[in-house]
Image 1 (cartoon, rainbow, N blue to C red):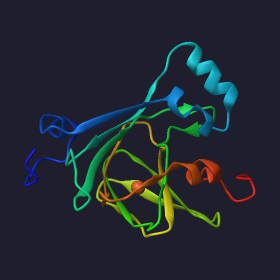
Image 2: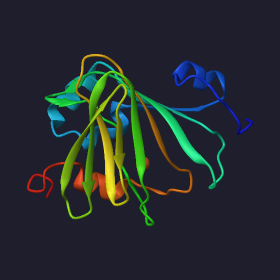
Image 3: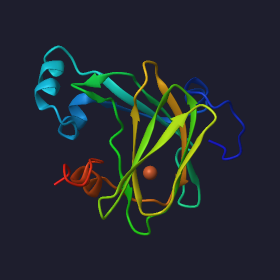
Length: 174
Ligand SMILES: [Fe+2]
C-alpha cells in the first residue's frame, strides 16, 4: 500500500484500503479474566469475538506510525467488561494515544510499579498514555466501542508484564 493516504476513520474503510485485520476471541485471552467459571461457561457454547484490530499502514517500517482502528465489542465475562489484551511497550517504553470514535469505555493504564489509573475513552476525546504506562481498553458501555490508537511502529509489545500486573489494583494484582 502507498503510505500517503487520507481515508475515513472507519473499520470498513481501513479494510478496503488493505489493513491487516486481527481478531481476538475469548479463548485466546481466557486467563486475563478474573472469573474463570464464567469463562468456562461461555466457552461451552462458543468462542465470542472480543475485539478486532485494523492496522494501517500495513506492512509497516519502524519509521512508520501504527495508526490502528479497534472495534471492542460490548459484553461481560462475569462482572468484568470485555477488554483488549493490554500491553506495555518494551524499553524504550514510548507513548500511545487513543481517540474515541463511537461507544464508551476506559483506557486502564498501569506503570511497572503497579500504580493503576483510568482514562475515559469516548467520541471526541483523546486519552494519552505517556511512556511507562501499560494500557488496556475496556468497553463499559452497551454498544461497540470503536477507537483509533496511534504509537510508533518501532515498538516491541511487552505482554508479559501486562499479564502479570493485569491492570488490577496493586493488592489484587499479586
Ligand atoms: Fe500500545
